[in-house]
Image (cartoon, rainbow, N blue to C red; front, side):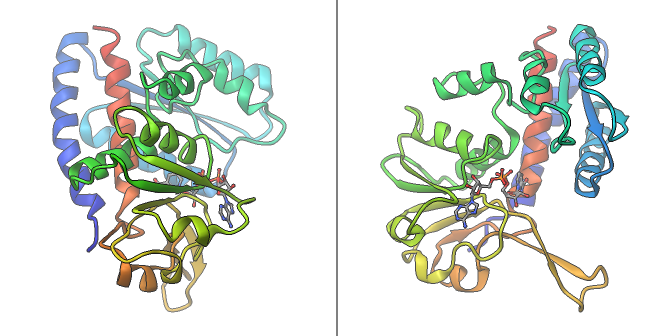
Length: 288
Ligand code: NAD
């Protein structure tokens, strides 16, 4: 059975839109999301445009600060510092990836943790890891909402998370292994020697790798629940764009064994932006 992420996100947006109305009344302006975009990475441009479009649709003021690829570290730091000081700037995002000459960690750490709606500062990662999250990174937050809406309990389950990035894998591990979810979590990554040995006994598998066909039907047990986070472009001459978007799992063989699976597109993706918008609301509420 497919998990319909679009439908779940529609329900989430109903609550978010109501919340935005209440916040806007209280702070006498709409909540704001400020996105710093450096360079011309086409995927980043698409992601940022999607975020801004959604902001406009639901009543958040999106503010794009677009800078050329050759901007220096000091200039980015001063943009962040101005936003930190601006009482009308609720959420701040530094769209990743950034060019190699910039120091990502220093720039992220310069964002005021109270405005860090991506949840990537050490303070916010720390709060999440001790079970007291402030801003949960949006994709991980979206997956938790999907599990909740589908009434999938994690308690006592064997959950395998494939991928250990700061934006997906690690926050998933922190959330699922914490005292509110109580799962037994195994983390697999690029240096895992025998992936199948871990996945074959898993009740739930979360795959966030960024490569097609990392997991196939032979590697999972019957009834497994699969959350496919990956977004991969593969060549497809039959498609007018010349490519298709697929996830990280080999969908045909897995879907024959899985009791539930998120499709790509239409699974985790729609929930990611929804949960980012929820984080912006949380940041704006700090002004009340
Ligand atoms: P990342 O590149 O930061 O991390 C990938 C992880 O996969 C690493 O931890 C690496 O150790 C692991 N890995 C690599 N090869 C592996 C292999 N063969 N077996 C097991 N593990 C392996 O990626 P990310 O930012 O976490 O994103 C992962 C994927 O999810 C990408 O396709 C990305 O586009 C997608 N994504 C989707 C959404 C969404 O909203 N749907 C949001 C964020 C990321």
